Length: 138
Image (cartoon, rainbow, N blue to C red):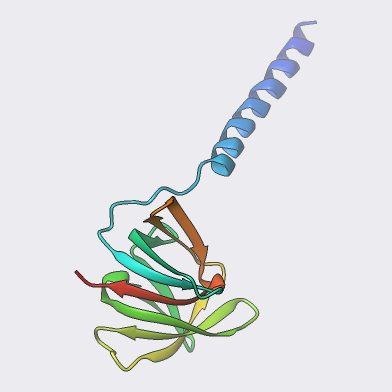
């Protein structure tokens, strides 16, 4: 009986540990973090959304692929992102920055998730589900 109790305890402990950590990840939406970045998003339906404290994947920079190189671009330096073409794993976008105001065609992960605080609460969107993103300067 002692061996059964030990196995039961181990199984129960494993289940509780997995269940608690799994449940926490699934039920808690990403909160907007205080980034001070305001963005205007035009979704695929053409509707505009102004969001405060914008971030992508919880960071204030985006991972941009230009050819075979990756660049980390600070959102504070971005002027706009215009979604152009969908690829297998990436989205081709036209990126305008302070350093390159004329823009450049680069790739972003199609699964990049961005967040912000909108008029209805915390907002979440994928780069693949928008037309444009503008970083608004104060």
